Structure formats: C-alpha cells, structure tokens
Length: 599
Image 1 (cartoon, rainbow, N blue to C red):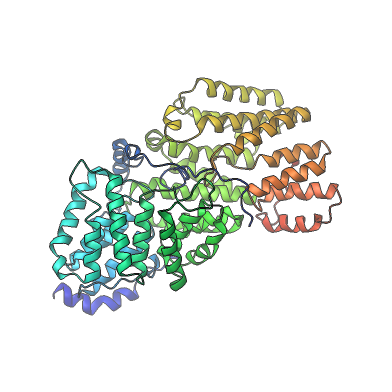
Image 2 (tube, rainbow, N blue to C red):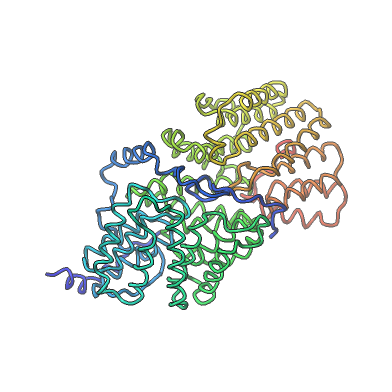
C-alpha cells in the first residue's frame, strides 16, 4: 500500500486517537532586562541580546544536554515521528500538498512554532516531508524553526541544515501555492552563507520581507503572526520606550497586527501568546488579561503556552491564577520531557522557568507548602553543568531555593542546608541570607549579623564578572540581601529604630533593581518597612508602606495582611474590606497568618 493511500484510509482513525492531556499597575517599571524570557533568565532582562552570549549554544552546555539525553535511549529524537496531538492548539494553514498526513503534521508544526517548542516543531515538519517529500512549505517550516527567536539566538552549527532545508523549499517552489511562495521567498532573506552579513541585518531583511507578505495577505491570521514575530525578533525583549507606555516605532505595526488577529480570531494561540510577550513588560499588562484567559485553555499539551498566562496574572496580582497556570505547565513539561529529548532551551530553560514561576507565585499567595515543594524540585532540575555554563541564567533561578526557605522554612531546617561551593559566590550570599533570616527569627540577632557580614565580604571580594557582564545586577541584589538581613537582625534584638532605617535603605535599593519576571528579589521590602512601623506603633505610616508594597506587588497576601493589621489599629473604615481581600488572596484559605516578624 502506498503512503498516500495509507494516509487517506487511516487519517480519520489517527485523528480519533490523538493524545488527550489530562489591577493595579506597578509604581515603577525599569527597562526590562534581557532575562525576561524563559531562555535567558528566569527571565526578564533588558537590552539587546549579545550574539556572542548565546547561553544555550555554548559547547559545554550542548555537550551536557547531549550526555543527559543519550543516557536514556527511550527518549524520542528528531528522527522519530511524533504522535499527532490536537492539544497543541487548533491552528490550521491549508497547504498545497495532497497528503492528508502531511497537512496534519504541518499544522502540528505550526502550532508548536506558536508554542515556542521549536525542536518539536522541527520534528513535525520533518514528519510532514516523509509523507510528501515534495512539500516545499514543509521544508520552509524546518528552516524557520532552526533560526533565531526571541528566547535564543541562532545556533551557528545549524546553519548548514537551515540552508539545506531552505534550498529544498526553493527547489520545489514551482509546486507551491502563491502564499507558500511568498513565505519561502521571505525566509530566503533570513539566511545566508555569506559571513559578512550580520544576524541583525538578516533579521531586519526578513522582517521587511514579511511586512510585504502581510501587506499582500492582511486577512490571513498566520501571516500576521509570522510577520509580528519577525519584527519582535529584530529587538528581543525590547519593545517599549523608557516610559514603558510608548511602543518603539518598529513595534507599533506588529502590535496592531496581533491585535487585529485577536479581534477576528480571539482564540488564535499564536496571537494571544505574542500579545502577552508584547504587553508583559509595559505599564499596561492588564491589556493582555483577555489574551491570558483565552490562552490558558487553548493548547493544554503545549507547556510554554499553558505557562504564559502566568506572566500577566503575576503582573496584575492574580497570583492564584499564576500559581495554577504554572502548576499545570510543570505537569505538562514533565510529561513531555519524560518521553522526548527536547531542546536545551526547553529542558533547562522553559521547564525550570515554569517551576521558578510556580515558586514565586506561591510566595506572593502565601502558599508555603507549594513554594517549598517547588524549591526542592528546582534544586534537583538545575544541574551543575547548567550552573557552570550559564550562571547569569541559572544562579538567580537557583537562588530562589534559598528565598523560599527564608520565607517559609523552619529555622532549624534552614540551618541544616549545606553551603554552595566556593565557585558560586552569588549563591553563597543567598545561602548566608537564608541562614541569617533563620537565626534572626530564632532570636539570634548577633549570629544573624555575622551572616550579613559574610555577604558584605562576598560583595567586596567575589568575582562576579560573568554575572554582571551578562546584565545580571548580582552585586546590587547581594547588597539588598545584606540590608534586609541587617534590618531583620536589628529588629530581632529590639533595635526597631535602627532596623527601620536599614529596611528603608533596603526598600530604596530594591527600587533600583531592574524589573524581572519572576523578580530577582522575592518580596516587596516595603512590606518589612510596614511591619517595623507597626511594631513601633506608627500604624498610619505603616499603612503607607504596605500600600507602596501593594503598588509594586498588587494583591500579595502578606502585604494585605500587614495592611489589615495597620488599619485595625487606626480604626480605618476600610479594615473589613482589607481583611476580605487578604482572605481571598491567601492560599490555602485556612493557613495561619504569618508572624509580624516574618513580614
């Protein structure tokens, strides 16, 4: 039986067996650093991505990935046919191939492109060409996903494969439809073997070519999204002017294109996904709440898409929704990675990012059990090769383990955590911080100050160049940790006025640290300022401090609790309403409120 007749007879059966998977705005937004994205640091960062700093493309990192993957021969590789799965989304782009399976695999590849699982998308596009070796647009898909995207630059080692796939598409272009020909011709602008051409030049040429394709097909939603992403790729994570309300000139037409798709096709996963990325770093994240709500259920087996609503939910103070989104995303990722090799970006970028986001969301909701569980998982899934290869990505993620212990851990347990190796001074500083917090909460202020002194020594003596050269404000975060710890230590000794001065300095330091998501620092320090003011019997000032913490971290449970206590002391008429907000925000609902000293 021919492949064509087999596909015609069996397609309906195969499709029937598809796998089913189980506002307030912040007061200040720093320019988003280049770590915002999952692949570059828990992701949030600003500035241009240096092409020479391709964190997931370093040879030692790739070798570590290959070693881990080759250890389990059961993992599926690019050469294996993927199962067709309707839970990657609903995108359908009619292509000229007569092969039903080729169409199905092409659609799956496009859905995976929208979900930023480029490795799995390549696998689908390869499967499409096995059913129809003359499908020009399927080779276009292979070449597309081997290029750069907003979460990672292009791997130079993939250029030969990229040019081969593009060459095959061009050789078959006579059989393609007009819209397919337009896409292939546009992609031809993105790649070259000419070493004198820079990636920035090629990305701009591709974006310009896609603008022309979009002008020719303005009503096609897939063309619009491919165009918008091409524009975003010219300036990853740098879409807004310094005021975070004005789009950069090149981004405005891309934003409008995405909004037009959402207006006509509100359930388009690619549109909702890109819109979240476009809006999350602005002062208007609430504009993407609708996109987040829709995306939450559009592609239940695309882990990154399941996770993405959490970015908006976190920004607007919907921490329980962010927690739910990331818990679901982690489960999807673990199911996927248990059977597939995947890419380094997915296994060591997206997946840990989702766990980190789960931890951060739980922290804002006061859910200590979930936060500590996520911390233990993070400790396991960020291995030493990743710590060594990409410290500016992995160390802030790993530091959240110590933050979770500091916020929710039992002091006796925290004090048993072993010290990180000497080659990780940033992590050592956060280990000292967690120990110091545990000591301060145990009434041992002097030993806590000794831990702060150890952080101060690391700030002065540690070599942090690899972190700071890659746009991570390591020394500033370490200084913040030292100040918070000194304030907590002084408070534990009853020196509340000294503690207040130090904690106010810490709050000012936090405001100077670029915004990230999840944030570099795990809670709003103004919350601690408010707690000390309450202990000093200055509730009116405490109300102001808690309100400031809620402007930067809206609806976070512990700040609402502090605000409730402060309003009680002033007989504020909003006391009962604040209590209701706290009880709505806290997770689980019956968890005891934190001690004032822990705020």
